[in-house]
Length: 146
Image (cartoon, rainbow, N blue to C red; front, side):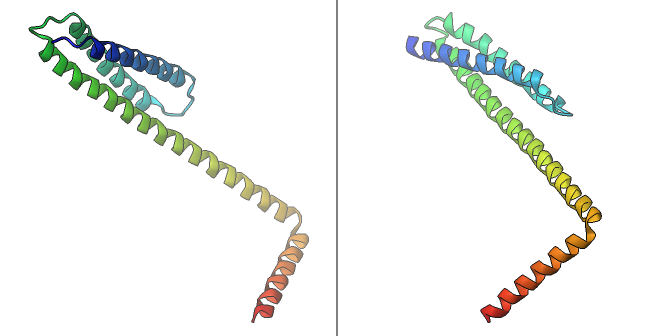
């Protein structure tokens, strides 16, 4: 028996995934990573999977009572592949963003270290006096605790 509610739900889901693909395309066009070829490749694979799912879904919508179950089963497998593809792409994108953020943090940290080194080179006496004062203060506090 043809389940019209299922077809309506799946049509809504397919439209949502189509919109997500469009957002991914826009994101990748604006994303300026040094090497985003792997993201583009995964996106192409995701689009191919989605396109196959759309083709099967069109067959499902026009199916008859005789072939509905067979096409329904094929579409269910295809839809699972689409969902899995989106999960994998999301994980890949998250990892890419984490690596990018890590690199930004490392660059920022190195920048600050360079600034401190430059300050020490410009003010060696003041830096030595501050270090001596801090060492004396810590030593005094540790001595008092005993």
